[in-house]
Amino acid sequence: MKRQGPDSSTIEHTTDELQHSKRKHEIEERIAAQPMTQCVWPRIFDVEVLTKHLDESLRTGQMTNHGPAAKRLEQEIVTRLNCKKHVAVACASGTAALHALYATYSMLGHDMSSGILVSAFGFPPVLQGNWRNAVLTDVDPIHGGPVLPADGHVPSVICIVNPFGYRVDVRFYRDYCDRHGVLLWFDNAATPQHLMPDGTNLHDIADASTVSLHETKTIGRGEGGVLLVKPELFDVAFRAVNFGYDYSVPPEHRGATYHRAASNYRMSDVAAATILMSWELNWDTIVKWNVEHEDEIVNFDGIPFFKGEKGTFYSCAYEPRQHRPNFEVKYYYYPLLPREKAPVAWRIFDTMQCRPFHPPGGPCPYGISGPNASKPVSGPHSPRGD
Ligand SMILES: Cc1ncc(COP(=O)(O)O)c(C=O)c1O
Image (tube, rainbow, N blue to C red):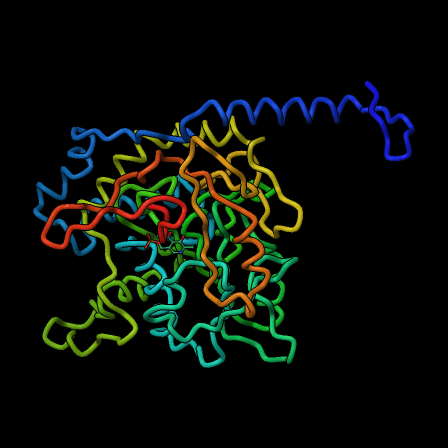
């Protein structure tokens, strides 16, 4: 096949080029024919299966305080995500997991005085509560995480947001943290399962990591989150989600063992059972979609987020901004710094969009009844695209 070159010469199309363009065309046709990106929708919900996962909690009457379902969720997520270096602590949300992460290291006496460095391409919890003093930078245009200090200052922690199932240049940040003896945390709220070239889960590279199990996330249902920490930190992380209380101290003195960075960040058994039910019924479909649609996920020139190996889970289809009449596209993540301070974060935000895996209106819109009823906000400007 021939085409015209810029100087009127004739250029041969290679078979590869032709196949690639045919494939791209097929994918575009497939997308245009859908009313939404059909990863797993509707997610199956089955009351019998839910009750099965809640059975022991109901039988023992323990619906919280690390009940049977929350304990099971902690075991199961580590197995399902093939985490080799961490154990899980069940939390009320991805946000709670981030606060518990900070609390864990505070309780260990880790010196945070040199700051937690995060990039402006993230979600508000990295600037709220325990994280309110985090130091924001623009996005590094090559490495995708925060811009490292050029003045020799070394932060106490680097926290990376690996967005939508993609990863940033984690090796670059791991090397920096190892060289300077500082911590590397991942806010992997939307990236629970990102497979590295050697088949390992991205989480393994972090000192600690968090995942959201919110309804909008691929493996989420309702509310929930997990904090992934090294096994030797489990006891402290467990305290972090329970006000800091030290359960080895007798009840009459335990009250004094609270910690200011800790709080009630734990997961209830109803939430845990709902998520366990959803995994049992939907996990295989999520795997199947992500394997079968692997070629719809691509790396984009100038965007420092990199796709994982086949089997990686994506939380949305990330693509350049374009008109998508069938879809309620979302714009994530609204940069956490003004334009003049974070031009790279804004360039990424302005040029890209997310095709969510749920239909217009969100997986479940905010309630509209009650005295202060207001219409749920939906559409591209919905704050989190719920
Ligand atoms: C990067 C990031 N961090 C944290 C969170 C908070 O998770 P959750 O909604 O479970 O509190 C989200 C949720 O969208 C997120 O995308």
